[in-house]
Length: 213
Image 1 (cartoon, rainbow, N blue to C red):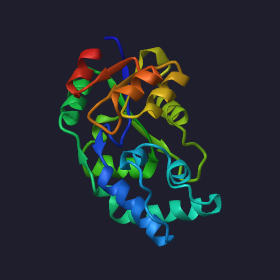
Image 2: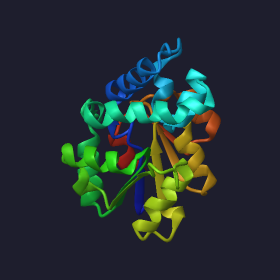
Image 3: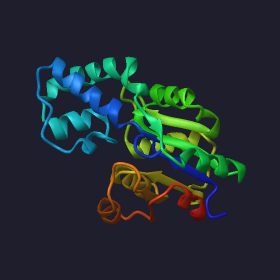
Image 4: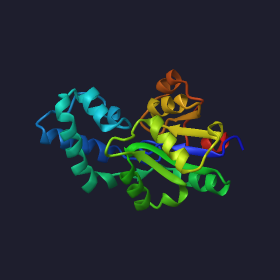
């Protein structure tokens, strides 16, 4: 096999999480009496929360912690389960597990949320370790999350790993660590951003990933 381990982003890759995420942003901004910006909603899907509030909403820096807190009030109670597994992803995970390929999650979403979603949708058994960001801010960049997944999963040879994600953040994180990457087109990203970031592969359907392995 070409790869022994595959890392999956969560939002827009394993799960269609847009409804819960967008509703969480709208809830937080409503609590702060700030209008939702006139930008594409997909921009909010993938980056860390503080980055999105700063770069896409342009709220004052001192309000970002409260915006993040309000977002999580909604998301923890309601938004976390406003999602569904993408067609073909469960079958892909079953196939990779059957072939002995180690699967991991490497997500910017807080790690407790990642694991709660996986358990709720019966996906937790497919992954050797699910890494997310730290709510306290100790780690959170895509590069840091990838490293956390590999270290906890006991993966020593990064050259035998593939990072799969739907945004350029996933590709950039993999590039920073010298890991091959795969941009997927069923999520929230577009081909142009993967080409610009230098993704090793670009695929349209989950089953194509099995062929890369």
